[in-house]
Image 1 (tube, helix red, strand yellow):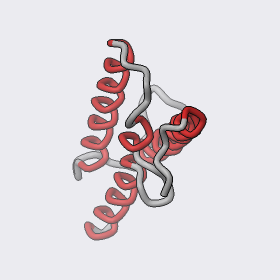
Image 2 (cartoon, helix red, strand yellow):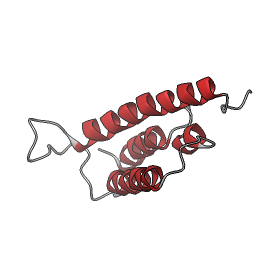
Image 3 (tube, one colour):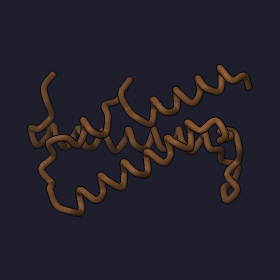
Image 4 (tube, helix red, strand yellow):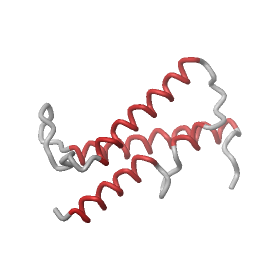
Length: 108
């Protein structure tokens, strides 16, 4: 794969992981939610750390996005990163719904 194509696919996957585009971002979805317990803060911190680790893996040109994951059944790094982006957008949508029900989602 040409370096330009490789860079382009990495940028697209990172964009999906970060949100925006057709979806809201994680930070926008959780801003203003009333749960303030330490467990909530720990969950948010863990989410961000895990996402950052996956972003670093995807952005690293040494990572073969098409390599099969050894413990999987044919899954590739690219497939798993896209799955995480899709999964995150589903749950972030749930946060948006919750905030709308609580009246804390900003009207645009």
